[in-house]
Image (cartoon, rainbow, N blue to C red):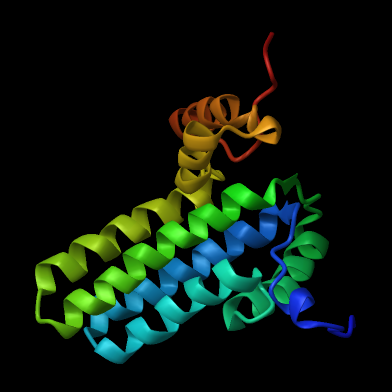
Length: 180
């Protein structure tokens, strides 16, 4: 286990990011969000918003969900299912976490001010975005990051989105063969 040697180490976002871990964190976000939507307990929004803030600040270092995923869930998935994790650029994933923070934080503020419809709308949007990441490896925040700032390492986003659509239509879990 690595020992943190400085504050800079604590607040360093990983680059590259393990995509399996990102997808499992997204699945955890879905579970947390659905828990709020089912139980309508305001306190459930606190760990959701904190998790996004922690992941924006430090990747998985200060995030309980991030720690659970990187220390236990990802290694278990990789060994159990023989998954070879892909590594993707860190800055777009950090941007995606910041967007998630805006949605979760906005939902918490809306809930605290009694604007229930806005809380629900923001959280449904969060579930949709996290669902795309968890199920199809389509990161909407990464797509937005690439469109705004560009990303030399993100050139495969369009192809991956097309492959996800093909897999969804065919009902296939495997990666389609690249054409061209």
